[in-house]
Every structure is written in structure tokens, then in C-alpha cells.
Amino acid sequence: MKKFFKMGCLGFIALIVLIIIIGVAMGGNDSSDKASSTSSNKQTTKDESKKSYGVGDTVEVGDMVYTVNGKEITSQVGPAVLPTEAKGKFLVVDLKVKNNGDKAVTVDSSFFKLKHGDKTFDADSAASMSANQGEDGNIKNSFFLEQLNPDLEMGGKVVFDLSPETVEASDLQLQVQTGAFGTQTEVINLQ
Image (cartoon, rainbow, N blue to C red):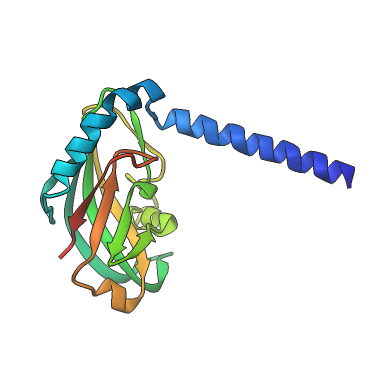
């Protein structure tokens, strides 16, 4: 029992250290940057929230720039040999991401949320990887912890597993954010 407790404590400490390392690696701002830019961020966010974005629009969120190229509804994604099957229906969003900042950013499918009324849906990371996999098995721009250096852009697909009713809704919005902690967000209408 004592050994089990000791291993549990060590595991918990290791988890905390891992979270801190990931936070630092994802380029989080230090508190002095946040404090100095809080008032300007509130004003910018308030002004930008009045804008309406859609498919094909360029959307700036902090140092990140997003463009949704299109969407597709399907039952499976990935190569024909081993496709990933949806529990409901997949909504596949094809988009581009550009880093206009001065530091590398780790882009992940967790940057993207789907909004439908009061409901929020997370991206399916396994399906997103599969959707970006070619018939030869190579995965390109999977949005799974991809490092994106300043002034570079990447394109790929983010996949959401939704009920058949939700996937056909006309008021779906893709929420995009500045980084892993989403201090600034914007929504893109997917009509």
C-alpha cells in the first residue's frame, strides 16, 4: 500500500512537470506581457467581435491568421485501406493557419472548437490525423502538435465527429484561438 501511494505521488508530480513543460513549449506569454496588454486586448477583442467572418475570409486572432477553405460531410476519413469511421458523421474543415508572430507556435487540433448554439464540440484528433493521411500512409500537417515558425503557414483538415442532425445545421461556427490557452478567440461561420 505504501509503495502504491509513493508511485501515485511520483506520477502526479511527473504530470505537473509535464504540464509546465508543455505550457512553456507552446509559447505562453509571461504575466508582465499579459498585464501590459490586457487593456488593449479587451478593446481589440470587443471591436473585432462585431465582425462576421465566413468561409474564405482571412481571420486574425492575435499573431495567428486563419482561413477556412471549405467543409465536407462524410462518414469516414483517411486512406482507403484503413479509414477512420465516424460514430455519427464527420464534419471535415479544410483550413490554412499562418504564424505572424515572432516565436514558433505549436499548432494542435485543440485550437479549434465547433459551436452550435450553446453547445461546444472538440475536434477529433485521431480523425484529424487520418484525414491528413495520404494513400501512401504519410501524414502531412495533421494539426497534432505541429511546430509552426514565424512567417510560415500550413494547411490541413480538422475533423469533428457530430450527430447527423448537428452536422447538417446551418448555424455552425468554427472557433479559432491565439494558442493553447486561447486568450483571444474568434468565430468563423461555416454556412
